[in-house]
Length: 441
Image 1 (spheres, rainbow, N blue to C red):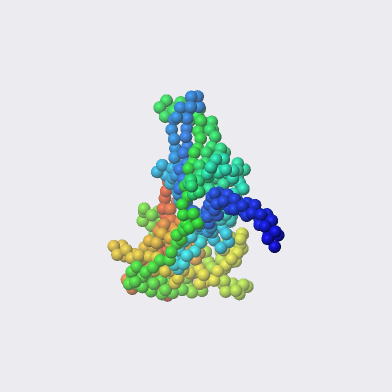
Image 2 (cartoon, one colour; image 1 turned 90 degrees about the horizontal axis):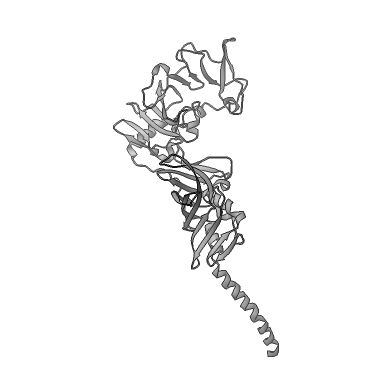
């Protein structure tokens, strides 16, 4: 038996030695385990230097620096980029359809998302390490791995949105531990203006970027959290006012620049009589407006928008001209009420000096405009999360008095302007259509 076993043992030794050698080689190569962790999550800090030299003699002229800070996970991306005193930031998550989305607190104190585009999260905000494998690298010296040129551009763009030709993308390790990445470019020829003589000169410019990563595989992006109670007494008073609004009221609408008082000669009125809605656009006119009511020929409980036919002297069904027209997707009466009953008072704080409730929760404020507006008054600024003011004033008897929502925008000359919309509630529970108004017959 020994004569049989001995050759087998001798034959097995080379195989065991080879396996140990392979295991040793794998242990000495830290790249694979690094990529596996980085594909899960990481925190990134990067410095991108733009180096500018004279073209004729190579003399150094100046240098610009761009800074990046990012936290990336499978379903969230927190990014900030800065140049000098100017910085931009974004916080994007993956919604249920896989699209990039903004996370926010809805008016009812629930975490929600607003899709930023119809593309996928992975295309614009995905983890760049998912697109590279150990086979895409070459070890050019001990602990230094060069990413294949065919993968380098796409990787650098997905990592930092660098969009210029590259020279090298190098991954550097020390004692088996990741140290940093260095991304470099060749020199490009360009033109700049001398700051003293104002003459134009030829220059050579290039980019050098150092990237450091930490919290590999363990990084977390904190998401939006629901609001908690801060002032139970005033919150309860606000809740009582919000939930007691009847389905019968009149709203006086004043829209004006934030820095100026409203001109009430241009006020519009909305009449909610419990069954139909008349939005009187021109004060005193009973035909210039928007009229919503049920129609006998469409017995589905929906309110349809009517158009006043001056020739016939009556209101007629308004035919939808596009999929975005109201009558393409009509609503019920309750759908067109402001969403007061579901608004969370915890999102507001009481301002005693001005005797108003102010939405001061920045996670909720951006999308507060439409829920606090009548259902036929929703506007794009509010839909896109650009509400920057939301206040509620109560009457002396504790009922809703005035709701103000606002937004800011740039005019055609680039000046920042702000607009406020005041909704004043009157005739609560006693509203009827204005005298002389004849609805759909």
